[in-house]
Length: 199
Image 1 (cartoon, rainbow, N blue to C red):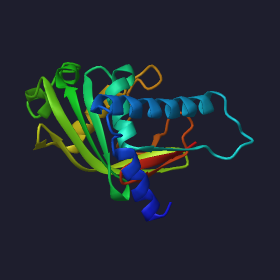
Image 2 (image 1 turned 120 degrees about the vertical axis):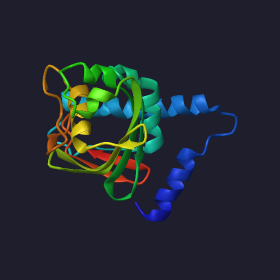
Image 3 (image 1 turned 180 degrees about the vertical axis):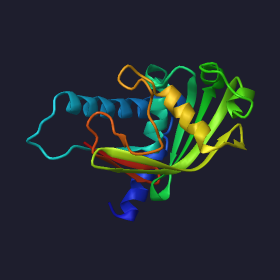
Image 4 (image 1 turned 90 degrees about the vertical axis):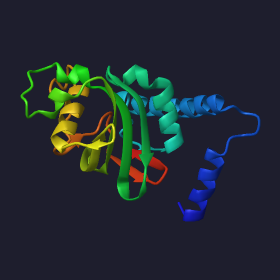
């Protein structure tokens, strides 16, 4: 899409209609994203191998509204208030509130382990570059902070692994190397304020 068209689309999407409340706008954006998510899941469950790849585009506003309205349905316990900023060059800025007690108590901590000294609900901010290709994703960390204090990558790796554990992934997802994209996603094309999923 040409730059002027992208700017025009962003203005139309981000400008609230007259008379609509912020809550209504958020709910409408979440509903739009929900329809797109359902279509992507449906494509994965019942793939049409004869058709061309499905391209699903969404805005940062739709993504964050969906996280706000439906996040509790799929985010791991102990994670709240997730927001994502999609920036230039594939950069993502993710903020969440995380319950560190759940992570800290899983194993015995030595006195050199930073998790031995933190507890409670904290704001975790992660900035990095997200790249995808051929059904695989990589995340290159730029900065990670807990309540505004810089933390080592090892702590972020542990937090992500803990909060992405499942019966299929008992050790969680590692961001140290490539990881498989879910629901048959081939790649994710990021741009400032939006993204397109290719499935």
